[in-house]
Image (cartoon, rainbow, N blue to C red):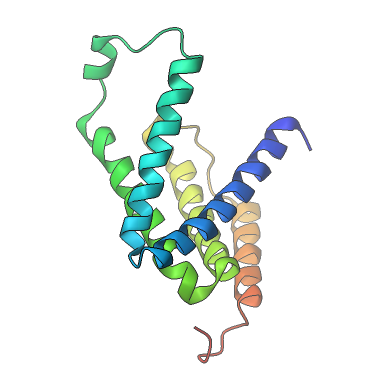
Length: 153
């Protein structure tokens, strides 16, 4: 396992920890969206501080104007939905179940994005090996969450 793989594992662990902590924040302030807003506000402050400390060059106005309008808003809107849903669902499903379902959604969607090369990202066609691995992953999610019985949350 290389350094980038370890960093990716650490990022996944950080997401699980922050999701659990911020879901608790949402419970304590009695509003999952408020918890989400607080988390995004702090994340914005931390990101701005990191940019200030690490960036020697900022984007030119031409670069900023070249960004398609949908990219300015869609990522943030999807993040607000995803994070808000996490904070709402974790107290109901538990961290493990929520993370496992979320990972399944991420893997399936990432495979589709990669297959078509959306957003000008590297293209990786869905083949039999990837399909089988994804099916095994989804089967694992089903097993993690107690199988297919209807009495599960």
